[in-house]
Amino acid sequence: MSDPGAGGGSAVFDAGLQPERTALAWRRTALSLVVAGLGAARLLLPHLGVGAVVLGLAAAGTGVGVHVLASRRVRRATARLLAAGDLDHPAAAGHLIAATAAACTLLGLGGLVLVVLHGAGVVS
Image (cartoon, rainbow, N blue to C red; front, side, top):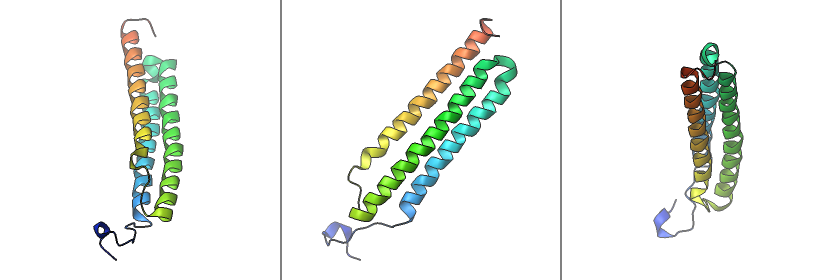
């Protein structure tokens, strides 16, 4: 294999490990969102009622969405890596990361609002 910096034309790409590690990391993130959301709904149900169920289902739905979008992203990245040996747009995953962070932030704020409203006696 030639030196990648020498411009020898050979692509530096391991056909299995890079996309697989990325896919596994996103699957763990999605599974964590689903489990945390459903667990929080179960634990908070006696205290927050329907609001806990709504937040739990929203978190689970976010986890499912992250899994679907990440799977599509990994398939596209793998195809580009196999075709060209590198990624045309290495920052393309930033959208998925930003969307996941925004969804988690909104879920957290929703939970905070429910807890505050419950403490104030507005939600029972």
